[in-house]
Amino acid sequence: MAINKTLTAELSMLDGSVNISGVLNFETVPTLMKQAEQLFKNQDKISVDLINVTDSNSAGLALLLEMVRTTKLQSKSINFKNLPEQICIVANAYGIDCEREAFLNSQFNS
Image 1 (tube, rainbow, N blue to C red):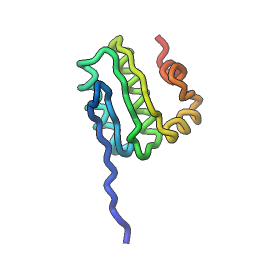
Image 2: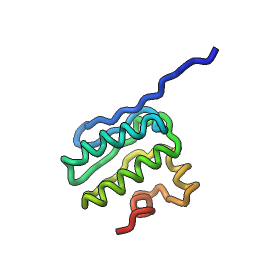
Image 3: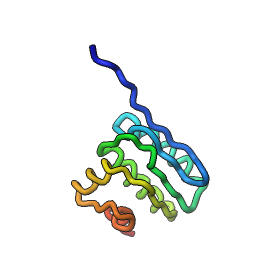
Image 4: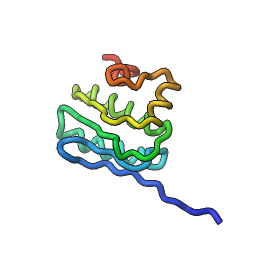
């Protein structure tokens, strides 16, 4: 018998930082991006901490790249802390370096 395990993710504010927790996949990322867009409206400098991400696939990378794109369009700054190894593995497969500056400038040069 297969166990139907629900995979969840959550986005919250803690000490001025956007915290992402749980599993970043094709089911959870669309909701997280909508929530992030709302939180980003009230901030000029955005810090995103991924320390509590338990698993991720290419959807997690897509979420971060969309966050970069959105903030650049709004002339805001964003930084990421504690990038999960899974996201870096996928990023490297696409030729994106996980180092902060390289990651932020990899797809969205001004």
